[in-house]
View 1 (cartoon, rainbow, N blue to C red):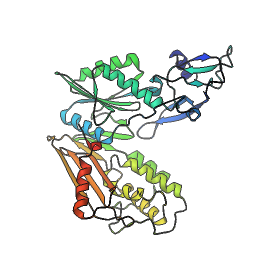
View 2: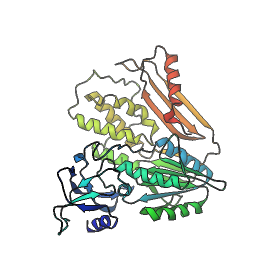
View 3: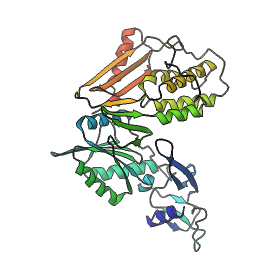
View 4: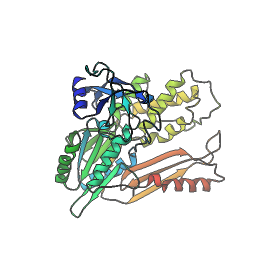
Length: 405
C-alpha cells in the first residue's frame, strides 16, 4: 500500500486543493486481489487505490466512457499469420495501465483513507490523470496508448480499432491491445526490441518474453501452448474452475454437448429454483466459446432462456458441463498452414425455434487450415422459406463485424 501511494505521488496523480460546495466529491477505497498464473498458482498480491466511480455525475465528471475491446477473430487471424510466417511473438504487460490516461474533465476525489496530508486534512485531490474506478479511465487509457502508436507511424485497423499495423519496406508489425495485455508480432525481431525501448520511456512495461516452443504464455485468459505443428489455444484451467464452481467436477462425462433429440422451449418444465446459478453458469460458458467452437450451438441455445430458466434448461446445462469434463484437453488448433486462402462455410435450419419460428444460422471462416471465426445464433427475422434462411446465413458471413480488412 505504501509503495503504491508513493508511486501515485511520484507520478503527480493529483494535487491538493481546498474543498468547496461546487465540487462533486467522489470517494475512494482500497481493493485487494490475487493475480494468478495460467495454472491457478499465485503470481502476486495486489493492493490498489480505487475511486468510487458510482459517485460521478455524467456531463460533469465524465463524458464518453466507451473503450474498444479486441475481437477474438483478430487474435486468431494475427496468430495464424505470425505462426505461418515464423515471426517472433512477444507478450508484454503495461503495469497500472489505467493510470496512464489523461483526464479532460475536472474530477475531485477525497484524500485516501489513512493517508491524509497532516497540514491539509480538509483539502481534496484534484485528479490530473486517471485512476482505477473512474468511469472514463478505460477510454482515457486506450486513447493515450493509441495516440502514442499513431505518432510512431502505426495505423489502426478499419475492422478492429485495437489492432495497430506498421508496414515498411523492410518489415511488418502487428500490435494487439487488450486493456494492459499486449501482443506484438513482427517479421524482424530487432524491431520489437526497439519498440519496447521506446515504450518504456512513457509506460511502465513488463516484458513477459517470447512465445515459442519452450515457453507457456497466458493471454486473455487463454493458454497458448506451442507444439510441433503450431499452437493450441486452450482454456483448460477455466473449464476446471467452472466445474468446481458448479460442483460438477465429479460428474460422469458424456460425449455430446446436447442430445440430438433435445428441443428446448420457454414453456416446458418447472422454474429452476436457483435462477442465479443458471444464468451465471451460462454466462461463463459464453466466454468459453472463444476457443471451443464445438459448444457454440449449445451455448447459443441455452442463452435464449436465461430470463426464465427451467429445470429442463438446467439439465441441458449439466449435460454440457459433463461434455466439457470429457473434452477437457480440447482447444483451438492453429497450424503452420502453407495456404493463406480465406474460405467460409454456412448452414442453417428453418423455423427451428418452437417459440417464435425463427431459424438458427451458423458460419465458420478459415484462413488456410485455421479456423479464425465462427458463429451460431438465432436469426433476427422469420424466414419464409429454407432458401431465405440460407441467404440470411450467407449475409451474416460478409457482415462488417466479421471483416478482416
